[in-house]
Length: 118
Image 1 (spheres, helix red, strand yellow):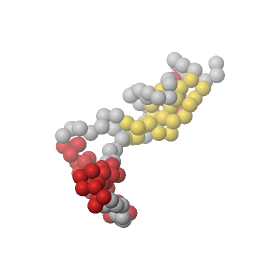
Image 2 (cartoon, one colour):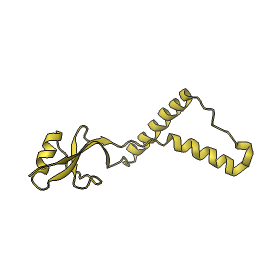
Image 3 (cartoon, one colour):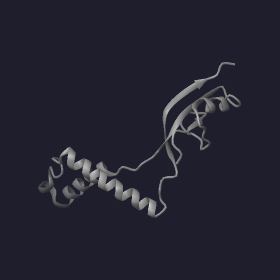
Image 4 (tube, one colour):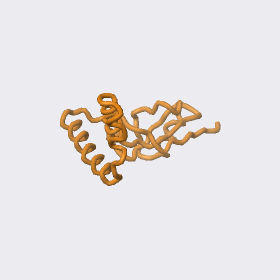
């Protein structure tokens, strides 16, 4: 996905896939068809399943064995969690790439509403 490109929305919710090199270029394009527009910068979406996996593992353990599993995985250190996150993210991203399942969508950040007087 292209980085540092800009996209437009007429409702602030759905951003189209037509991208522009600069924010100014995107705004100028919008002047042709509306007086109010949202402009935002495209950013890749990267799946980060780490926290969900630990929560799910702990819930599953509790559901399977009850109180004996209470507190399991609650004391994992930040360093160990960071290491796990890095390993898991690498595994997930490699798998998605190998299977051609990488996200074909993007996040929009730095969103700004622009109102054109006229």
